[in-house]
Length: 350
Image (tube, rainbow, N blue to C red; front, side, top):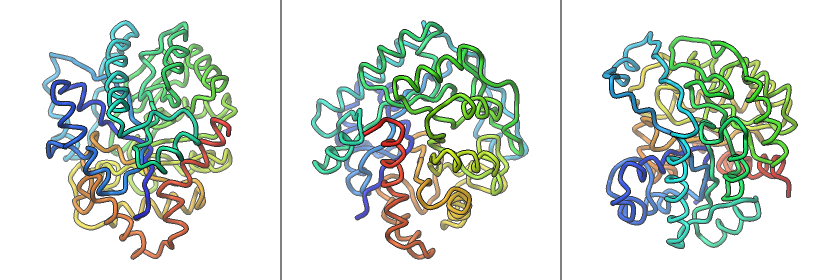
């Protein structure tokens, strides 16, 4: 079984919503979502980026987003910004859950590629602490150093809704990622501080002008942990060929998102039989980025995924589909985990 190291998951959100059941959800599985320890082991899921995402709670919002995303065209309103005072306790709770997972002896919070390799060799899940949206950092950036001290090694300035750092893309189909202003001055300071601390910067969810700003400022490889090809599915969340060229020039990385809403060429959120949409995106990414700059960014526990995949236990079926599609074992191994370790070594250092 080829080990899979993954660019993005939202497992910690399930623990935040059900803290009293976390032992069952993590160690045994409750049959829900895409991830738990038994299904990770069954599928060869060796580790990945565990996202700290701050949920929006607008009690007045009764919009059926799933129904809208099943009937394109759509243009969904973004939630209101969330301040650091609200975000920080939520982030601390999620990080506490990840630290508890480490204390079970089944997972390691990794701060270096050496840590990742050691965890994989020992049969523990190799976890990278990642912020999907930097609301918990705050304007003075002091908290960034606190979070880095407890293991934060990857930050996305936004999760679609605006922050004090920049602007994300709305969930719109069809739609271009060129949706508004770029980074704020505080956002530019955040990028420079992340560079100084060797924290990876995630471009997924960021709009085009923000993407351009990071490309101009950052001295690290450009990385989008869970995004797909705009040329196949013209969603605001997907990357244009121009953006892919910039990522390639920086020797960066893109993780293929398994979300059907970002895979389906018609922009629908409905699942599908077989593998064709996923393979079309993967082929396009490999063609435009090269074989050493593409991986998986599943978005497990955050999206609907193809029926043939199902959950983390279905990863061997995906590997077999890649073989049947003509990818050789060396390329599959690079996509499955080696490319992520390569770009992290370039970003974090040895």
